[in-house]
Image 1 (cartoon, rainbow, N blue to C red):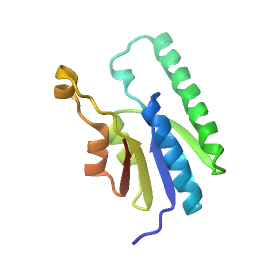
Image 2: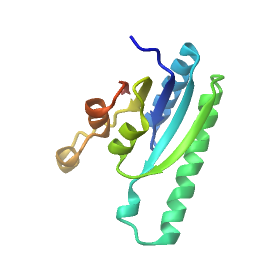
Image 3: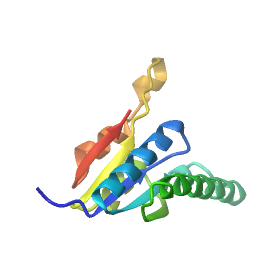
Image 4: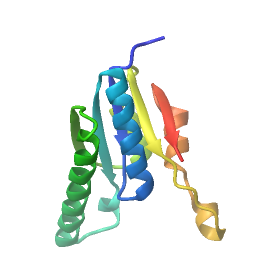
Length: 136
């Protein structure tokens, strides 16, 4: 079994992601490793407004900073990254084989949303080069 060198915690601005941050910080403290909280901005393909794109970037930076503060309460070294691209692909690219990804699962349970849901957590589990822990 490989040693885990870093924990990656992909987030969005949700309560489920907050739970994943707490779990990730707990495991980082337990294992004595650093953690990276990342969020992926995939709106660039849909938004042509520079002003709106900048507003969304600022909002993402703000919730990353809040999540960083939560994780630092556990006494671990935390870095944050805002990445542009398709979430599941960028998470997999970011990970190395000696990482552990701790990601929240967002259950969509109704109608069209469920049919159209392309689960990021499922894609990450299927394609990541490392272990993945899913927080429900």
